[in-house]
Image (cartoon, rainbow, N blue to C red; front, side):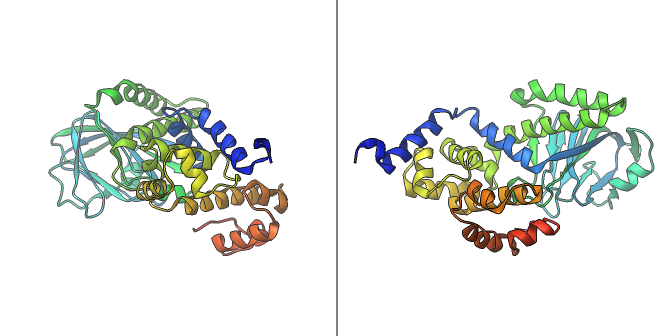
Length: 334
């Protein structure tokens, strides 16, 4: 058998082609962009809060993911029983998992917070005045919505991403985004909803990218901090239907099998093949909801050699057969 017929050489050549087209500095951003497309960012809204101490506002509406920019003054943000974090002028935080949280003046820790929905209902337009008349603060508060609110990728995001106003690297791009968003939010015109959604999606993507190196929680976003794991994530998202194995993904990562498996699990929070399985099933779910692709084609697209093998895997993932899923509501709780 000559080298052209060798499966081992053929697979290695294909993997080398993947590696040749991956740029280490840009590929993590590509994975992040792919995730944002899968989550399907659909809407965002903003208010300018002119506050005076003492004040405390809770953000706990289901599905709404907060974004807050401290334009003037200072405040605290607290999630549940976690210690509060002080935010200063120029700081930005996002809560991408929609975890309930409270913003408050530093002297209001014992104050019962007012819900953000109530504060908004008692105001008109994009400007809200609230508080007890003491130390002033101005905060731009927004909320954004993902259409795929049950997407497993959301569990891989941190509870909070914080960009400090004193971070010179971030300040170069952050100021422009915030100024443009506020100009559009406070003086809306035709198409403002689309403009705000697209600006917000871009801002959140930049914030998540900026926060990769400072993450302490595991998840796919943390995996982007390691070049080898990032390359493996990239090919899984680019070509989930390929016949990937631990060995071939380790080759893409440029690591030994054992080192890659350990590193991937430590950063992403699950074994590589389990992550690949879930990626394949999410893609299959999307194709089934689309309704225009036959089962044989879907099975091939997500890496299965037969409809039967695919159907067994999909039922293990979702609790439904592909046909039942296609006819039903199409929810994924895995």
